[in-house]
Length: 136
Length: 92
Image (cartoon, rainbow over all chains, first blue to last red; front, side, top):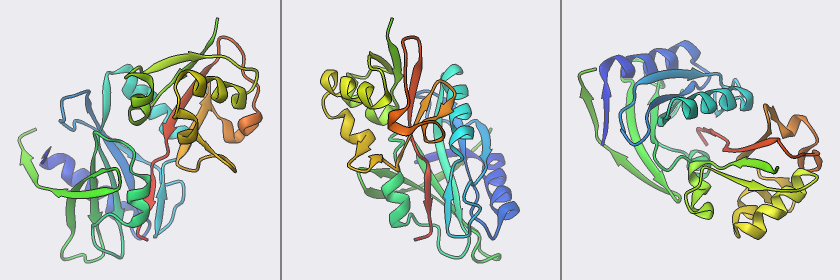
């Protein structure tokens, strides 16, 4: 289960709309082992594409080092799908490489029904999990 | 002196959980060979027949080695090499 504040959910969805129709992506850092997402870090989609995203490698390096220095880890790795449902694609699964992360997918395909879903992806196996909104 | 190699969470199974390990070599390619001799299995998670795996980013100090010399990039004692999984995906 992903426990996350409404404020962070809103920030992810706002970022998805800001970059729509391109895919938006980013991470939410939290203390190592806490499983609590706390620090919102929108990332640049180096691909600037409606069908693909990739963290800019130098931005990722700076952000990962900063997390390391603060004893944080990427608790949430998020991205948006802008014309398909919020479910991990084959590409998403093949790249998923943070074993402790919740992979959040947002779909902006239907403006009246924005999807926000969370998954674990381990060794190519996708498991959807419940999202619980908690007090910040 | 040695070269410090920082290992991402997903590859720490090869380093007994260590966040960073030491290795030696004159180029990144040599260094990865030396890593493999100390931590068998690590090499194939970083490189394949065509070079650096596309799922992986490798940095020498503060630079992405893809913008340097790739596997031929010279390395020296005191350098830090950081391995990170690339974060990417998409709708297909």
